Structure formats: C-alpha cells, structure tokens
Image (cartoon, rainbow, N blue to C red; front, side, top):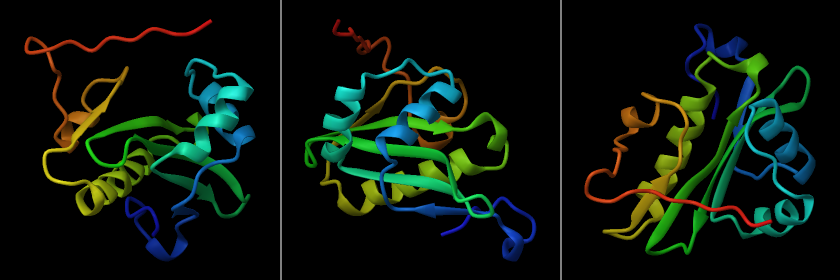
Length: 146
C-alpha cells in the first residue's frame, strides 16, 4: 500500500508496511515527534505485545519515517498508540495513511462493541476518523511509573 496523497502514485517515495518498528526506530521516531521517551526495557517488552502495527518507509533512503500501532486485549479493548511521523516527512498524508490502515484492521478484526480509545495532543486529526472526546460522560486519565 502506498500513500495516496501524492499526485503521481508511480513516483510515490513511501510505502506502508504491516510491521512494527525496531526498538531503535521506535525510540528515534518518538523523540523526533517530541513525544515523551520510553525506557529501552519498556520498548523491548511492549513492542512484541502489540496487537497490530504499521510503519512508513521512505523508499529512496530505506528509512522508517512513520509508525502507528494498536495495543489491547485483542477482543474488548483496543488503543491506538504511538502514532508518529518524522517532522521532515509530515504534511504528506502519511499520518492519514497510517490511521487508515489501523482503522481497516479494527473494522476487520475487532468484534462488535469493542472499545477503541486513544490519547492525543493534537486537535482535528482523529475526529475525522470518528473519534470523540469522552467528556462529560467520562474522562481520560493517566499516570507514569517511575
């Protein structure tokens, strides 16, 4: 699957692949996207436990420049997680392609009435995929371990 936002699809330098990033790439992309760091131990334990994941590869360089994954129990609860596109490759529809792929997986694999959530620090992007704020019905919370 390639990024359909490019005018000439035959010249598209990106490919979307159904796989997870390496731990090194995961940490690098999170840092580049100004996301909070994760411990190396946490990354190595967590990535293999993903339900599903995709990466974006810049074909001319072979560099992984985007990622997104789904975590959860594979039946009742899913969470969109670790969505990131390297700043040098943003504004080219890659985030939309990642979300489209993740949503396609959920539509095919998630049972009826499954709960899909995400934490986001940008406005307007995830809403286009049907996500809504939970307030006032409920509120999202978090805490970090030390």
